[in-house]
Image (tube, rainbow, N blue to C red; front, side, top):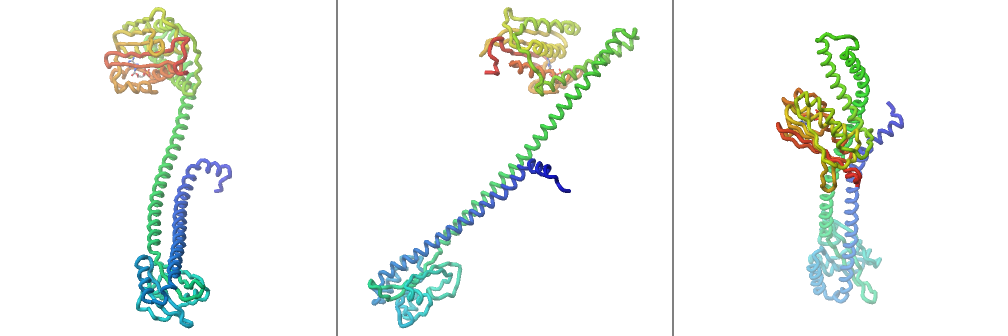
Amino acid sequence: MRMRFPSALKGIQENFQFVYGIFLFILIPAALVINTVWLTKQTSTVMDVELQRKASLAASVFSNALPGYLDDTALLQSHVEGLVADNGEIHSLDVLVPVGEQFRIVASLDTSRVGELSTYIYNTLAWQTEQTIAYQTTSAALSTEDPTALGDERFWVVVRPVSTSDGEKIGIVSMKISSQVIDNLTQSNLNRSLIMLVVSIVVIVLLLANNTRLYRNTLLLKKLKEVDEMKDEFISMASHELRAPITGIRGYLQMLLDGSFGELPDEARTKLDMVSQESDRLHSLVEDLLEVSRIEQGRISLEMGSVDIAHIVKLVTGTFQQQAAEKSLELVSTVQPDLPRASADAKRLQQVLVNLLSNAIKYTMHGKVTIAADEIRDKKPMIRIKVSDTGIGIAQKDRDKLFEKFYRVKNEETDKIVGTGLGLWITREIVRMMGGEIYLDSIEHVGTHVTVLLPVAGQSHPDKK
Ligand code: ADP
């Protein structure tokens, strides 16, 4: 199936990281290999040139001194041997003088050849052209002229005509210099470069492999985020859709219970009361879910102002008096006289305190629930509102997770208490949005304190420096 151009382009875009990774994977090691081979070749060529120059220089120095000794063959021979003894790289050295068309060896490292005649082509060539001839060979023979016994070792041969100071040609120096030291050096450099190359390639492969893993993790994270967003959208949409029918059901239930459709038999009323309680539960779940999605999507706008805490505390406490009395709980509120006003959104602060008081009453079986407000002066003056109870408390292991979405403590005591696990999360988010902080302290079977700190009105916002 042919891929249409835009989708092919999209495919490349999406897989760019991957293609880029493969490209680097091939390109970097290849570049390293090419660089190593090229550098080694260059070094070897430079070394060769240097060796050739060295051989020519040695031949030149020797031949300059030669005219003085040419008549004294014994002295010449000892000079040849002395020069070779001082320069280990010289493998063979012959001194030749012309005899008609040929040349006679008058001194040589290979003493058995002294007196022999030579017709070697390079000798003739150097003599006739009056030029130094240099060439490479792998022949390990002691003579420069023997092309047999080819081996691995490389030599530079330099054949140089010898002249007197008047320019009269009197002989030839033929010298063979081994390039083994240089070759060994080049080889060891090559070996070192190869080791470095292998190490670099391994490092690059590991880095790229890691990069690929990171890339996969990034993709996974992206997918997870997408799924998370889809989930949030679904919850938001589903809660909206559920809201209308639940409102309808609750409305009709209330009318039934009010007797709008006639008196109900006792049993029917009892059952309807249960249905009503369940529909209230459903209603608060849907409201909590809607609130969560509003917070997560940043759709909550606060009306910040200067709030009278005493008034709000009184209002909220009043709402819960009956509920507390039904459970025989004492509900007490104390507010510090002349408490400064807090910087908050009055409606949202009310929602926060309703959540906290509702929890305190819900999770307290006997004893007392207190709501207290005062001013503390730490780094900055803050309004502290503390909701305390003598309820079931919370174990240490659960305390760190309480502010997570949907987290509910699961034990025998909380088993029959209904809730969504969203209240504390919503509460904390709202408090933070108002520039406040929230803490929870609790001892199991003793009670719980939840403290809300809010900025005093007129002071700068703690988060907005
Ligand atoms: P829920 O709707 O379950 O009450 P919350 O987010 O308000 O959800 O609370 C999370 C959990 O924290 C609750 O399920 C409960 O176990 C525990 N909790 C909250 N407030 C109190 C409290 N005052 N005393 C004991 N446990 C509490």
